[in-house]
Image 1 (cartoon, helix red, strand yellow):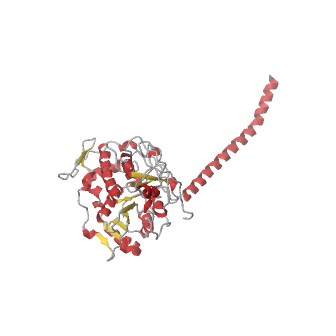
Image 2 (cartoon, rainbow, N blue to C red):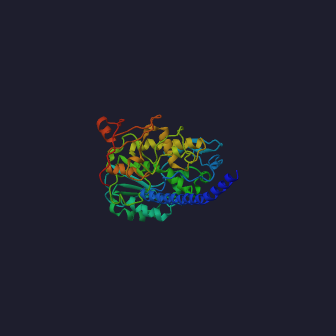
Image 3 (spheres, one colour):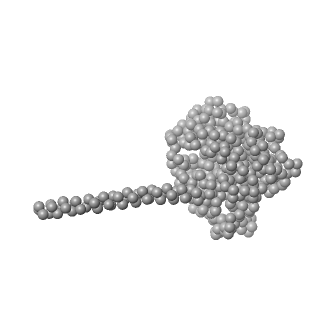
Length: 415
């Protein structure tokens, strides 16, 4: 027993240096792994074109703030306009009231800069108002130069103090530029609901520290309204309209080019949307919980393109979806959630291009389709059907409407 004890103690003494070596090696490996992770992350960020939003949304401060909206007693209700009732008893104007309200601008606010305006089959619609938001004004000034350098016919909604700046950036295309001056407080959703309503929306916004102002929601929610106003004016006699956030063009890849060169990729009766992640529809058709269920969130909303009749119908569905959100006490702070809910509720009007199909940004890649054309695998939500492959150009040519056809991706050799 004594011999065994001595041997045991001796082996323990010999094992101590070995343990120290093992711990040292493990520590070094840990440091190396952490360092490699940092390097790979930075490399990944630099390799993604203009993409600021690929990660899941930041952890919200208080998810409980999303429920239990304030009682709104000072909503201005116009005689004869439809109303809705929220779960807490507030009576609010229906968003569909906007369909019958006159535009909040006059003829003098529709600004032309050339005696002769061209006709164009396509119109690009965008908007910009300076409000506290995710990025500072200097960033938007940089990005505006890129999108406004396009050769496409364009309708731009902005405030009066921005007219000269926008006009200067469109000097090359004044015969295909219309600026509609509209002050921030005149945006349709800002006047539809009272200030107390919007203060409550911002209070319940899980990302209020990033979004910073409820006026930002007015701009986001007005996207389909902007396009419908451009359709109503239809200065360029277009039948195809593409909405693009003014901050989508963060690099100079498309500068001075005509963006819409392949309108044949746009289906005749559906709106073409961008899926920034693999489409994985939630069970419900009203969805605004990307914080708990990020895996079900895929609608970009930064760009959309469709023919004018589809835009008009989509806008009506969008207004109805806003009403349904409020009737269920769901917040309106994410236009992407409402847009995705429109497509879930009315799948026949939407078709998506998954981000894997374009050699472009995950969120802003719709411009790739209309610029380069080709054959793409599209996705459409169809009562649980996982994937519908569409070769839109050939289907429209052969059948007069979209058929479910498999097609391989046809990328240009050089971009």
